Image (cartoon, helix red, strand yellow):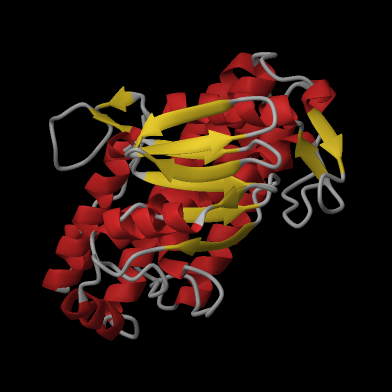
Length: 335
C-alpha cells in the first residue's frame, strides 16, 4: 500500500493526465495515480473536484487531519461495501464473541507493552521499571485466568496496565523529554505529541484496510458505540500501538534523532506539536517502520511488512466474524 501525505501549507491537490499533482507557490510535483492507495491531507491544503471524482471512481480514500493529528473525516467510494458481512459483524456485538475477542486483543496488547518496556529497562538497569513490569503481568494474568466476565473488568485491567506501562516509559526515556503520563487533547509534551499523531495515522491505516474489505469500521467489539468514532479501528489498533507507534517515538527520542527544536507550542490548538520539518521526518520514519518485514505474524510463515501484517490481521478478523468463533483470531505478539 502506498500512502500519500500532503503536509504543504496551501497546497492544491489535483488530477492531470492520469497523475495526482501537488501544487504549492514554490513547486509542482506529481505521481502516477496507479501508485497511490490512499491520500492523507494534513493541515491547510485543498483537493480539486476533479481529483475527488477520480479518487472515488478508483477507490482511493482521502482522509483529512490537522497537522497535530486530529482526525476530521474522509472521502470514500461505496464500491467495497459488504452488507452480508456487516450484518454478521453487527449481530456478534452483544454475544460472548465480543468479550472473547476483546480479551484476546487486550492480552496481546499488554504482552507487547511488557516486551517494549523490558527492552528499555535492560538498557537503563531500572529496578523501578522491573517492579512496574511485574505489576503489569498481574493485570495480564487477571485477563487470562478465566474469571473475567465483563468488558468493564477487562477495560479496568487494560487501563491499569496502560498507566503502569506509560509510567515505566517515563522512567527510561531521555531525561530531556520528561513526560508525566498520557495526555491526549491536547498533548502536553513531545512524547505525547509523537504518539498521539502516530495513533491517528495508525487508525487511518486500519480504517483503509477495513473499508477495502467491506468491514464496517464503526461496529466495534471492545470500544463502546460512538457515532463519531470508528470503534473497530480502535479495537484492532490495540495490539499495534506498542509495536509501531510507541517504539518509533522511543527510538527517535532515545536515539537523539529528534530534538526539542523539532516541536512547537500551539500549532492550531493549545498543546505541543511537531514543526513542519519535524512532521516530515516523523512521517518518513513511520513509513519505514510500516514497511519493515518481520516473522511475528501468526498463521503464516511468510515475512510480512507491518503494513501487510495489518491486512493479514483484518483477514483473520473476517474469518472469525464469519465463523462466529473468536478463537479464529490470533493477535500479533512480538518477542
